[in-house]
Image 1 (cartoon, rainbow, N blue to C red):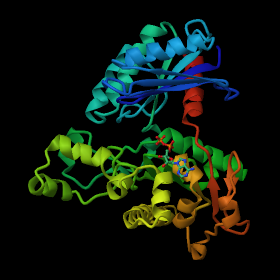
Image 2: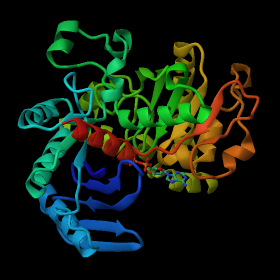
Image 3: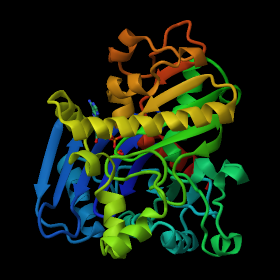
Length: 399
Ligand code: ADP
């Protein structure tokens, strides 16, 4: 069975894709379809080796987006129907209580993914449409769903339960599931490998800081807590999401500011977090504003770090002994300022950053703590596409 895998990550109005070899991690081509279903701004950017193709124009739906991407594969010399793809790996956001392993997609599995849309209305419908479309465009190739929630199926009951009316919560699937699991798992394995110890012996606190952001506590390779909950809104402050809030705020705003449900969803998903506080959601722009003396931007940064350190403290206590603190994703991998602030002044807890290492960029996994720091602080680049490709290849092999 070929180890060539097409990995798809279908969002509500976008598709990220990558064609890569699961064994060698070699990427053959990748791309991004944006603004699906919108009247303006539709765009596909496709990269293959040193070639970059851009298509601009309205993209009616996910199927049309994939067709366009497939056409661009052809223009760069790859016909996906005859390229010898061994599997298609789909990132699926919510596996609910049903799926916690990479799963070969059948009609029944697809129906269940659609059913789980009640828990992830912004994500699972797009994942299901992506699966339907690829089945049509690439018939006969095994398709595998890799769930963002899977790594967190091990959360102990106390960590996954909300203190709500137990019957009501059970009737509606209200519990903590956690997200970004593929990244947390991949990064925790890489960190253990870097430390030269079996994952089963290492306790870690992982900060996945991208546009979305989450932290996890991992004991011996097993996730025991995470900051995201029933939806990806809970926990850390993010680019456009607020993270933890007093639940009383929403009814208050509905009464006092006349917000209806769609307005609340817009506020929570798109207009809060760093953007809500400062007007920008990209950390590079935030840094620029701070450098220019913008007080709101500085406050946004401080709130972000305050929340992050609160969870760092919580997870240090939960784990008792911690071997490594790991930073990953766009902000975690690229912002020495965020990393330095996150672990500042914690020498008494055995955490000592090396400022020069923190500022020095090198590819791959690197240690940014001093050699004598009892807790290692690491930067580990995430690679969700590779993790999905490997999982999909493995499932296809045994199918
Ligand atoms: P996503 O959650 O969309 O996968 P990423 O993990 O790619 O996001 O992270 C994207 C974010 O990473 C950007 O919004 C930006 O804030 C941040 N980022 C990227 N490069 C840098 C950098 N050099 N310095 C600081 N932040 C960066």
